[in-house]
Image (cartoon, rainbow, N blue to C red):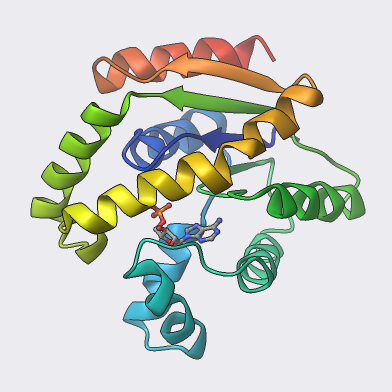
Length: 190
Ligand code: AMP
């Protein structure tokens, strides 16, 4: 299996690039942010629980997120591989993911980390907020909180994969196609 973690701060382009990568490599796209938003839209209990964190730019607690991700992944028993987008966001999630994949006799092939500086992220998120209608993209204070949470809680996940020799940094500045080519080259070299 080809199992990829697409990593990077909010606004780095993970969702955009995932959509292109799943087509090219025939992978299942698992975005915890998308799954939470679908639950909020559907008015589920999980959605109600997650919304209070998402609206404030905070992480949804690990036990909720990990359980949700695993049951979502289990919906695709015939997958050739997965792209994990927006997950793992804490070292505890990364450990849980390794354990989960091990029960399936597989593992993470590599982490691709999109690198974009903060000023550019703020610009991109505000722009996206105008089109997407996402409340968390429209409030500069929530955007800043998400960037801070990324630095404080999520960045250590990079070290987790570095220690396993699975980390590849990718320049996330350029056109969508340029960044896609960089990602594809990195994946083909895995
Ligand atoms: P995203 O669409 O990836 O930007 O995620 C939107 C929001 O969903 C985040 O700001 C978090 O509140 C929540 N979220 C998404 N993925 C996770 C995760 N792996 N762990 C905790 N919270 C998450």
